[in-house]
Length: 190
Ligand SMILES: [Fe+2]
Ligand SMILES: [Fe+2]
Image (cartoon, rainbow, N blue to C red; front, side, top):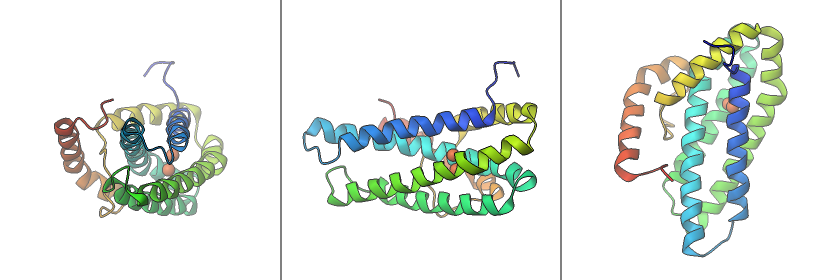
């Protein structure tokens, strides 16, 4: 691990920022009817899904257990509940075409859920982590999160409980299957 290693909070906040950028573009395309705009909406929604799933599963497996141990079990329970709700929304969204009337509604629900969740994490959980966990530990956790995200699932699996153990037991198979499907369809590539 080098001195350049970003700590876990920097990494997670950077992910949040990227998701917000995609949300902003998606909002600008709301109601657009050209085929090009529809295609862009579908692609962006896939990218946002991939990013959110990898990010959330990394939090559930690596970050939240640390928060439970050192900060607050209650904050983690609340965060897992919000992840589960957003995962259901992603799952419904995955089945819709961009020109389906329900697509905009589900997308709006997702943005609301995620923006609220990000506010909670950045405003409370991460602030508490900075107080309770040593900088060196936060950097080590950052390295693990970066490595984990490379092999994490890319599709929502709302039927898998989102505690660390369940995710670790079923995760590798789900992840491999997600990535094979992505390869076969070219999902998330442009
Ligand atoms: Fe997060
Ligand atoms: Fe989260």
